[in-house]
Length: 479
Image (cartoon, rainbow, N blue to C red; front, side, top):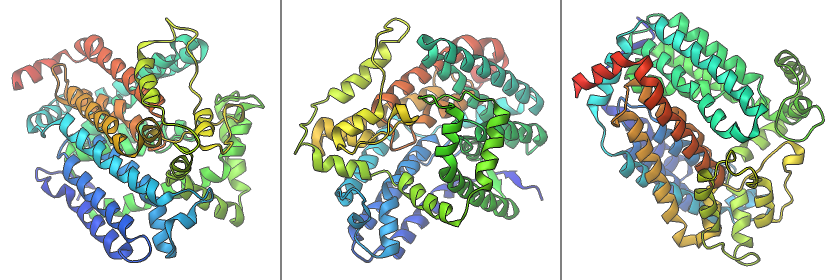
């Protein structure tokens, strides 16, 4: 029996989320944080109901689940320890209120994404599978290699010419659309040419491990998105392998947390900023050297730091204490700046101010967190920024509109007038995956969304007609 089979019945996809919601209520439904636990379980159930889309890339559901896990993490820790969630805060903020507002904001985001994306369309999924099956897997692998090489040139250009860095990096990030298409085609063709996909997976994983941010997770996420979109059934044997892989990812995350500060300092070579000045081979060698020097105490500290890093509501809890008591509401200034910035490109406005997340965090929390000089950028997150702008009631309105925007962009790529089957799916996933972290500043997140979506539009308008004329013809016939 193969590890992966193509299935037509994808109806029970929400079942794991319903089971998870029930388990949360059962395990954490008593104790000092019972209402937060129930709210967390309710939010998870609502997200699954709204955003599960059979045989489509689950990027909208992923955004919701990623942020839900971050908003709920401290509640889970408190339930495990059987103590009030506010007792976990090292800043003595109102973590309970911050968690509640974050979960309610996620529900608003989920409703917006569902309305924006509209109903599922089986025709788009069928056309995508037909297009993916019409070329051998090697063809999709060659396309991925071309995208990888182009991304390398674009990244070099972005570092050499600051005025074009944002659009160049956005175009470079769309290489993930090519990786998605390769994975989708491999799965659609029942594992034919799997060696090509495994080679691409190894390349992306290796590049991620040696980078400044050690982004080894994206290749795993993209693979999982392709599995869901293809309607593949994972066998019991494959589930065991995936469980081992998931445990390995957690271990890698723990290890990375333990060494990242020393590793990034080495990459910077004594300079400020977030750019590596050493070669890839030296970086990997240093990484292994730091990992080899870890001991039990370092890993224990890393575990605590990782849990705090995932549970991203502490800064918001401090903001609740400071705004408006010490700093007044901004009355929309943060969101207005976020919306205006993408329409003032640095190429035309070279004097446009830089975005410094740590400065904003220090302004509204007065915690004195590390900043650009230390090679880091610490944000308070877009939910806290919405609260700073509009207060605890009106803050949900812009978040609902953000969800609506994400849903509309997703729908335009997947089933819009220029959709090209798996290319549209891949571009939707690549354009939206940057919106997943709860800690993202709306200024960076919205700007990145606009630039990346524009880059995806350019690919559909100018690249797809030349590379995929046969795919466009198949889509027209299906319509």
